[in-house]
Amino acid sequence: MNKQGLQFALHLSAFMLSLLLVISISIDTFRGIPFYDDINYLDLQFWICLLLMVLFFLEVYNAENSWRYFGRHFLFLLLIVPYLTLFDWWGVELPGQTEYLFRFIPLVRGYIAFTIIAYGLLRDLASGLLITYIVVLFSFIYYCSLIFYVLESSVNPMLHSFWDSLWYSCMTATTAGCNISAMTTVGKIISVLLALAGMMLLPVFTVYLTDLIRTGRVNRNADAS
Image (tube, rainbow, N blue to C red; front, side):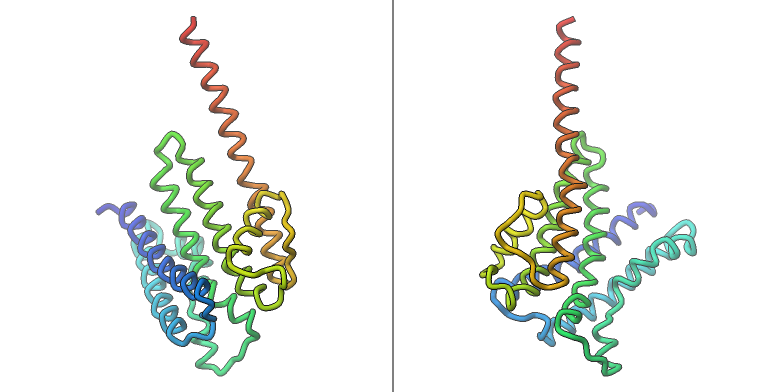
């Protein structure tokens, strides 16, 4: 296996490990179980973080310029540190919402790995870039829905289930607006991020469709001539 193939395999492994966390969070969320109080989840995240760190240093080792790669991807390392385990060892206590956000940090690493995988698989297809944008946007909406639901469900009377949170995230990303309003600080930040993601990614669809129509017209004119 060449270095490019090995890098892709490492990214895929990082994504699969993070996906395991997403599935665990999703199941607990749907069942109404506060995963941020679950010791087993904390242990699971700790071991996954360690494996992600091993994968990171393997990526550094296999890079053509290890030090340059380390410097450019140092943020990845910060995203996979098992902070909560360290805080537990040091006796540091965090507010509930802050602790939840720290538990979500490794998922960001998985999301980045997922975008790299999606682009690597689809970039050679005619509609690869468009499909990548669609996958990335909907994955981001789902991630934000999970965070929004866990943080808002106990304080927001307009939020009755995860599906309300998913509806809110979709409507916010399309900038169409929703009858649900964020009440927590983090929830408001998520609202802004969703709107920004929608404004940045949704126009890609318009550009793609416009180019598709223009290309179709050019081909028809060429055939007619």
